[in-house]
Image (cartoon, rainbow, N blue to C red; front, side, top):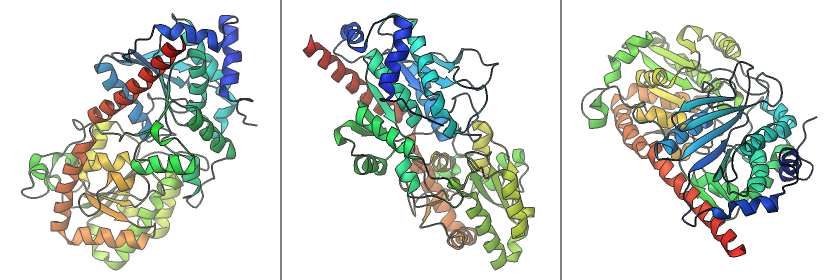
Amino acid sequence: MPHSFPDGPGDGGHRVAASLRGTVGPVDRLHYRRWCPLSGRINRVATISLHTSPLDQPGTGDAGGMNVYVVETAKRLAERGVEVDIFTRATSRALPPVTELAPGVLVRNVVAGPFEELDKGELPRHLCAFTSGVLRTEASYEPGHYDLIHTHYWLSGQAGWAAKQRWGVPLVHSMHTMAKVKNAALAAGDTPEPALRVNGEQQIVDTADHLVANTAKETRELTGLYAADPSRVATVSPGVDLSTFRPESPVIARGTGLLPHRTGPARRRLGLPRDAFVLLFVGRIQPLKAPDVLLRAVAIMLRHDPALRSKLVVAVVGGPSGAGRCRPEELQRLAAELGIADVVRFEPPCPQRELADWYRAADVTVVPSHNESFGLVAVESQACGTPVVAAAVGGLLTAVRDGESGVLVQGHDPADYASVLRRLYAEPGTHLRLARGAVRHAQSFGWDATVDRLLEVYTGATTREAMVKEMAR
């Protein structure tokens, strides 16, 4: 039976740490941190991503936008002189204890539980072992090795809580998704998030020095649903790699001429007809992401206009994820039942450069999710000059500028999506206007801006920590 630490993860962390360093307790440990300068200078950050490794391919298992976030921010922090150690659970015996992801960025694979991918519901029972591994790593260094902890997702936050109390450093936490929000927007076939997670998230909100929200809406959810202190919540938008996700040709960005991907090399590389109307879905195949909504919308489009069948290509790029997984073969069966199997193409998750080709080759990217904390796929697509048709939920309200860079659809009725997609097919001028607007909108989401803001949060947290300790001397 999954369990949490009996008196919160801090209590469990103290017991684990005692076996590593004798009788040194959390109060004694704080003494060692008093060297910290009041400037709040950050030299090294411990990033914790327990349930999914930054080494995993996004779009497979539980790997998704959060993986991209952790990797891209870590790389850019290192470029600015802040070393990053990313702690994650080892899922293969072949993995070395430490992998260099980039200069200044190490991935530390912590042995906790079996060497296999586990459903997230099974991970709480391995929290103590994982936390022990994190604390053991830090114990091998001189005190003060890490200046700050940044945890991602509630499971990591539980381990970070223990490390914060043990090391005497600030804890910054990013939720990415929240149980109360997900439970309010469950898709058919989805399993409600358990009380264990709800309670765990509340503990983290109450304990973290700072919370990072992806959007203003998420900030309101943290303060409204979890009673987070508004002064401890910072809105920091995720970004995209604008050097990778960019239009195939500067034509869209300049706003002149026809859409270049109609005859562009991306379509040739992917084997797509130059005159096709290409609809794209990118993401983990799970009820929350609602890929079935796109397939049902396509069936409606073809009923209205059978001649469109010779022009239409629907690409689904992603792998299975989550409990009660909606697997690609189930979507394939649905496509067959709907009579559209001949226009649907299923592709496995792929590296970012190939993914950028899919965005460039598509006419529209469809994101019909029931909830998104941000919607990285939507921004990546827009950065490539491809407008987005998305559900008007969560972070997609920020990621997509309705009527300017794409279209936001209220609800999840396939007929509504079909109507919008048919209009974009029938109105090239509208499609071109949205494509231009998509590129403009995406330019405000570069990773450098994200890291600028994160560093402000980090510096503020460490400066406050240092001042409190100085006053306590």
